[in-house]
Each structure stands twice: as structure tokens, then as C-alpha cells.
Length: 118
Image 1 (cartoon, rainbow, N blue to C red):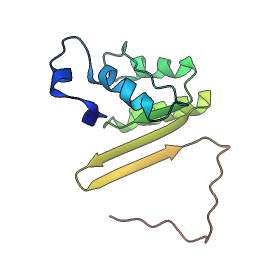
Image 2 (cartoon, rainbow, N blue to C red):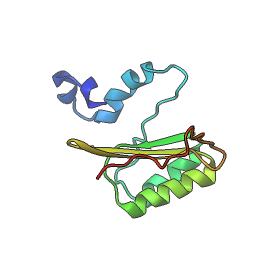
Image 3 (cartoon, rainbow, N blue to C red):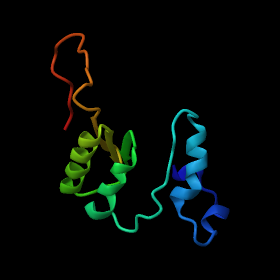
Image 4 (cartoon, one colour):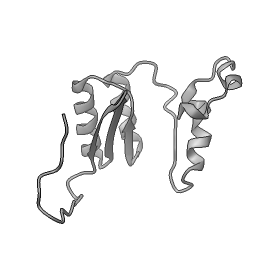
């Protein structure tokens, strides 16, 4: 979402990037409620896990976090019935992990193992 930011936005004191991007991200799909957890000051389990008790339906992570924290967040999402999406790009490489819960069905049309690289 940082491509939404302008030099004028970055000059504003006391407003973080997430708060600046939220209205423009929300315009992409009017059926999705986009919120900013402005009370979070550190990316720790103690601050992030309680947010999942607020009725969210999907958590999207796009920054590097420790494997232990990602697993804890995914487990909490499963316990509250929320989807979990982790996506990270590093240059030409990237990774994506999606957990849409136990009721999600993925239909494989040919039965071949998924393609992988590296």
C-alpha cells in the first residue's frame, strides 16, 4: 500500500503509513472493512493475538515476522474462524501461505503434485 503515499503524506507528523493508506485501500472493495490497529506499538504475540478476538474475518501479513509468531497468529485465526494470509516478497523471490480453515475445499483438477521452484 505504500504506493498510495505522496511526499506530502510523509511530511505529516503523528500519522502512520497504515492510517494514510487505509482509505485508499478500502476503496478497492466496498464490501471489505479495512481497519488499522493503531494501538499496536510492537509486533509481539502479546499485542497482536488479542486483536484477533475483535471479530475479524481475515488477517493479512505482508512483513517478515518470526516463524513462531506466524504460527501463533495462524493458530489464533483458526480458533476464531478467521482466514490467515501471509505473503512476502524479497526481490525476485517470494512466498505465500494461506489458511482458510478446515471447511475450505481446494479442488485439484488433475491430481498432480503442485509445481515448486527452489
